[in-house]
Amino acid sequence: MKLARGLLAVAYPFAVFALLRWLEPRWDPRALLLVPVFVNLGLLFAFGRTLRGGPTLVEQLARLREPALSPAQVRHCRTTTQVWSAFFAANAAIAFALAWFRELWAWTLYTGCISYLLMALLFAVEWLVRSWRFHQLRVAWAAPLLRRFFPEGPAA
Image (tube, rainbow, N blue to C red; front, side, top):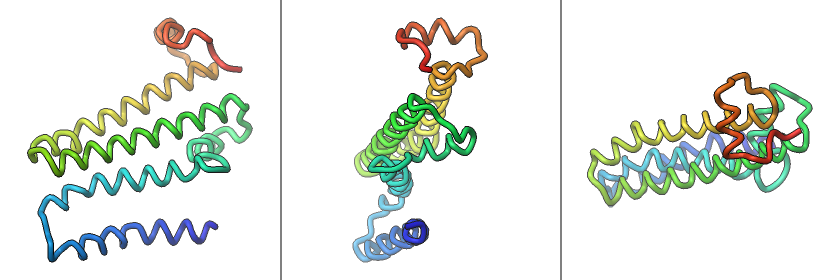
């Protein structure tokens, strides 16, 4: 199984290259704008495939730091993996739409700046929620704010 995953990881860039070579006779310069779409689809595949069974990608990363996770933490990891998968799907769709239907400046602004800001915001919010829910938050100002959005309180 690990060999198949390794081969797939190596084959993905070659598949993208083969697709671009196949498109060359019918070439549209906008095809180069699809690189962020392929990157996001690759990340969607990496996160999404772990949702089918076994530990999710976020759980695997969390276990590197803390090998013994509680059931609540495992559920949080699954939810986080679902959120990241949805983010990568939406990001790929937006990048595709901007590449094909909008001006170059809009595509550049989104793929070069806005998508990274959204990614950083998602990462920061997830870290804040995780830290609060699992009693690791050491920031006094965040607890009242998080209590407003998550009235059920921290998980055990």
